[in-house]
Amino acid sequence: MFDHLTIDTVTFQSWQSDFQTAFDIRLKQRLGNMLGESPQRLKDAIGHAVIDGGKRLRPILVVLGASLDSTPGSLPDPNDPRLEQLWNAAVAIELIHGYSLIHDDLPSMDNDDLRRGKPTVHRVFDEATAILAGDALQSLAFSLLADAPQTDVKTRLNWVSLLSTGANRMVFGQQLDLNPPAQIPALAELTRMHELKTGALLYAALMMGANQSSAEDRAALEAFIRPLGLAFQIQDDILDATGTAEQLGKTPGKDAADHKYSYVTVLGLDAARIHLNATMSEALNALEPMGTRACGLRACARFVLMRDH
Ligand code: GRG
Image 1 (cartoon, rainbow, N blue to C red):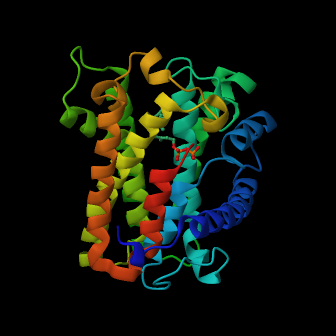
Image 2: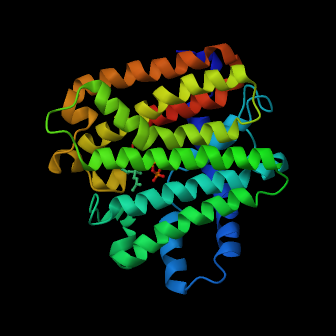
């Protein structure tokens, strides 16, 4: 679908790898500047959690959301100096994501030993240090937004508002996930929980990037990112049910083992796959009016659909 309006997956994956390299340079710079006074153990725990890991999907959404007009038909050069203004926002949202993963893995939540192919933060350090690392990442994220260079006050405030809303909604979703209903939830209830837990931060990422866009573009992006966030979660649930620890870098089969409601445990694997395709079509349809300006986002959506970890 929309093959003439997209970028092939191999090209996108190669760009994503360059993006990860560029992102990690900026991330390390910023952490180095902000953690000067931190005890070494906390610094190490934060580094273990957020450096050299993850797909960097949220920072990618920030950059693609901001690049609709600068690179129609292609992907933005991650080292383009015009992106300089965005890096604080891109790093900030990844720090919030990093905190959520550390806390999600804690014994009191998902109790996981493996994340991004490495032992989780509380396993390498200790539980209290893992909690503190997550705490610190939250305030570090917002100080990056407050101090973003070459960025007017209105944009910085808009970023703060989007990121705080996204992070809060993620917590609301996590609370729902921790206290599942006694009965198997209807699809609408499952969808609502995942819109909060997973979708809200993806929404914040894209809209932070697109904060200067026209109202028309922002409406199209909103109509895209909502189903994309759900598709991301459905794929995550399918991978949890079908992937290996080696492939995923985390413990597979947790949803079923922990009696969690997921798209697979509620719908079954085949229906979850059908639902994934329908949800992805909804996301791609929303981008249609944007033509080649949305090539990067379309390729990113395919990347979500095809990912194996
Ligand atoms: C603890 C407040 C709080 C929230 C936790 C992140 C989260 C909410 C839960 C993680 C559990 C989970 C599997 C959620 C599904 C989607 C998700 C956020 C997957 C991990 O994100 P990726 O795939 O991870 O972007 P990488 O490692 O690539 O950054």
